[in-house]
Image: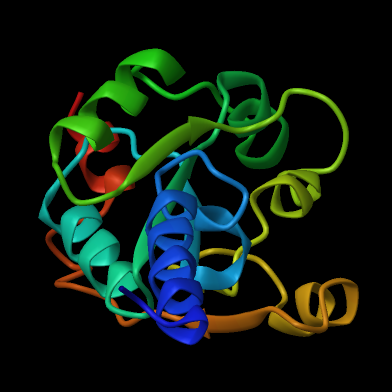
Length: 163
Protein backbone atom coordinates (compact mmCIF):
# COMPACT_ATOMS: atom_id res chain seq x y z
CA UNK A 1 0.00 0.00 0.00
CA UNK A 2 1.29 3.44 -0.97
CA UNK A 3 1.37 6.35 1.42
CA UNK A 4 -0.53 9.53 0.51
CA UNK A 5 2.73 11.25 -0.46
CA UNK A 6 3.79 8.36 -2.75
CA UNK A 7 0.33 8.25 -4.36
CA UNK A 8 0.43 12.00 -4.94
CA UNK A 9 3.89 11.76 -6.51
CA UNK A 10 2.82 8.97 -8.87
CA UNK A 11 -0.34 10.82 -9.89
CA UNK A 12 1.68 13.99 -10.53
CA UNK A 13 4.21 12.14 -12.66
CA UNK A 14 1.43 10.43 -14.62
CA UNK A 15 -0.41 13.69 -15.07
CA UNK A 16 2.76 15.49 -16.13
CA UNK A 17 3.61 12.91 -18.81
CA UNK A 18 0.04 13.19 -20.14
CA UNK A 19 0.41 16.96 -20.30
CA UNK A 20 3.55 16.71 -22.40
CA UNK A 21 1.77 15.22 -25.39
CA UNK A 22 2.19 17.35 -28.54
CA UNK A 23 -0.75 19.68 -28.92
CA UNK A 24 -1.41 20.03 -25.20
CA UNK A 25 -1.23 23.39 -23.45
CA UNK A 26 1.75 22.41 -21.30
CA UNK A 27 3.74 21.04 -24.25
CA UNK A 28 3.68 24.46 -25.89
CA UNK A 29 3.73 26.71 -22.84
CA UNK A 30 7.34 26.66 -21.78
CA UNK A 31 7.94 23.05 -20.87
CA UNK A 32 10.06 22.92 -24.02
CA UNK A 33 12.14 25.80 -25.31
CA UNK A 34 10.60 26.81 -28.61
CA UNK A 35 12.74 28.39 -31.31
CA UNK A 36 11.17 30.09 -34.31
CA UNK A 37 12.83 31.09 -37.55
CA UNK A 38 11.35 32.36 -40.78
CA UNK A 39 12.27 32.80 -44.40
CA UNK A 40 11.33 32.46 -48.02
CA UNK A 41 13.34 29.26 -48.61
CA UNK A 42 13.15 29.52 -52.40
CA UNK A 43 15.68 27.17 -54.04
CA UNK A 44 16.23 25.13 -50.85
CA UNK A 45 20.00 24.69 -50.56
CA UNK A 46 22.70 23.69 -48.01
CA UNK A 47 22.80 27.26 -46.64
CA UNK A 48 19.14 26.96 -45.66
CA UNK A 49 19.72 23.56 -44.05
CA UNK A 50 22.61 24.96 -42.01
CA UNK A 51 20.38 27.89 -40.98
CA UNK A 52 17.73 25.43 -39.73
CA UNK A 53 20.28 23.33 -37.83
CA UNK A 54 21.78 26.41 -36.18
CA UNK A 55 18.33 27.64 -35.20
CA UNK A 56 17.37 24.25 -33.74
CA UNK A 57 20.50 24.25 -31.56
CA UNK A 58 19.02 27.11 -29.48
CA UNK A 59 16.13 25.05 -28.08
CA UNK A 60 14.13 21.86 -27.88
CA UNK A 61 11.60 22.53 -30.63
CA UNK A 62 12.05 24.33 -33.95
CA UNK A 63 9.10 25.96 -35.68
CA UNK A 64 9.77 27.32 -39.16
CA UNK A 65 7.60 30.00 -40.74
CA UNK A 66 7.62 29.92 -44.54
CA UNK A 67 6.79 33.32 -46.00
CA UNK A 68 3.66 33.53 -48.13
CA UNK A 69 4.05 34.48 -51.78
CA UNK A 70 2.22 37.79 -51.19
CA UNK A 71 4.52 38.64 -48.27
CA UNK A 72 7.64 37.98 -50.35
CA UNK A 73 6.30 40.22 -53.10
CA UNK A 74 5.52 42.99 -50.59
CA UNK A 75 8.91 42.83 -48.83
CA UNK A 76 11.31 41.86 -51.63
CA UNK A 77 9.46 43.28 -54.61
CA UNK A 78 9.14 40.00 -56.53
CA UNK A 79 7.38 36.66 -56.29
CA UNK A 80 9.42 33.60 -55.32
CA UNK A 81 10.02 31.08 -58.10
CA UNK A 82 8.40 28.28 -56.12
CA UNK A 83 4.92 28.64 -54.54
CA UNK A 84 4.66 28.83 -50.75
CA UNK A 85 3.07 25.38 -50.38
CA UNK A 86 5.92 23.79 -52.34
CA UNK A 87 8.54 25.66 -50.29
CA UNK A 88 6.80 24.51 -47.08
CA UNK A 89 6.92 20.88 -48.26
CA UNK A 90 10.65 21.19 -48.96
CA UNK A 91 11.34 22.43 -45.42
CA UNK A 92 9.20 19.63 -43.96
CA UNK A 93 11.06 17.06 -46.07
CA UNK A 94 14.39 18.20 -44.60
CA UNK A 95 13.35 16.55 -41.31
CA UNK A 96 15.00 19.31 -39.28
CA UNK A 97 12.06 21.34 -37.93
CA UNK A 98 9.43 19.98 -35.57
CA UNK A 99 6.72 22.08 -37.19
CA UNK A 100 6.45 24.14 -40.39
CA UNK A 101 3.76 26.76 -40.86
CA UNK A 102 2.91 29.25 -43.56
CA UNK A 103 3.12 32.87 -42.48
CA UNK A 104 0.04 35.01 -42.04
CA UNK A 105 -1.37 36.81 -45.04
CA UNK A 106 -2.98 39.61 -43.05
CA UNK A 107 -1.45 42.19 -40.75
CA UNK A 108 2.08 42.51 -39.51
CA UNK A 109 4.58 39.73 -40.29
CA UNK A 110 5.42 39.50 -36.58
CA UNK A 111 1.83 38.88 -35.41
CA UNK A 112 2.44 35.15 -35.78
CA UNK A 113 5.02 35.30 -32.98
CA UNK A 114 2.19 36.12 -30.59
CA UNK A 115 0.47 32.91 -31.69
CA UNK A 116 3.57 30.67 -31.64
CA UNK A 117 4.98 32.00 -28.34
CA UNK A 118 8.66 31.23 -28.91
CA UNK A 119 11.41 31.77 -26.36
CA UNK A 120 13.97 32.35 -29.13
CA UNK A 121 13.73 33.97 -32.56
CA UNK A 122 16.59 32.99 -34.87
CA UNK A 123 17.38 35.43 -37.68
CA UNK A 124 19.49 34.74 -40.74
CA UNK A 125 22.66 36.75 -41.25
CA UNK A 126 21.10 38.58 -44.21
CA UNK A 127 17.54 39.09 -42.96
CA UNK A 128 16.74 42.79 -42.92
CA UNK A 129 15.04 42.83 -39.55
CA UNK A 130 15.97 44.98 -36.57
CA UNK A 131 16.73 42.96 -33.46
CA UNK A 132 16.07 46.10 -31.40
CA UNK A 133 12.58 46.58 -32.88
CA UNK A 134 11.68 42.94 -32.21
CA UNK A 135 13.05 43.10 -28.66
CA UNK A 136 11.06 46.28 -27.99
CA UNK A 137 7.86 44.59 -29.14
CA UNK A 138 8.58 41.21 -27.50
CA UNK A 139 10.77 41.94 -24.44
CA UNK A 140 10.83 38.34 -23.19
CA UNK A 141 11.97 37.00 -26.57
CA UNK A 142 15.65 36.20 -27.07
CA UNK A 143 16.72 37.25 -30.57
CA UNK A 144 19.80 35.61 -32.11
CA UNK A 145 21.49 36.35 -35.43
CA UNK A 146 22.86 33.18 -37.05
CA UNK A 147 26.14 32.83 -38.92
CA UNK A 148 26.28 32.53 -42.72
CA UNK A 149 27.14 29.26 -44.40
CA UNK A 150 29.22 29.77 -47.57
CA UNK A 151 27.16 32.78 -48.73
CA UNK A 152 29.29 33.20 -51.83
CA UNK A 153 28.01 29.79 -52.98
CA UNK A 154 24.68 29.19 -51.24
CA UNK A 155 22.31 32.14 -51.52
CA UNK A 156 18.90 31.99 -53.18
CA UNK A 157 19.59 35.13 -55.24
CA UNK A 158 22.51 33.29 -56.91
CA UNK A 159 20.23 30.42 -57.90
CA UNK A 160 17.56 32.84 -59.14
CA UNK A 161 20.16 34.67 -61.27
CA UNK A 162 21.07 31.41 -63.04
CA UNK A 163 17.54 30.92 -64.35
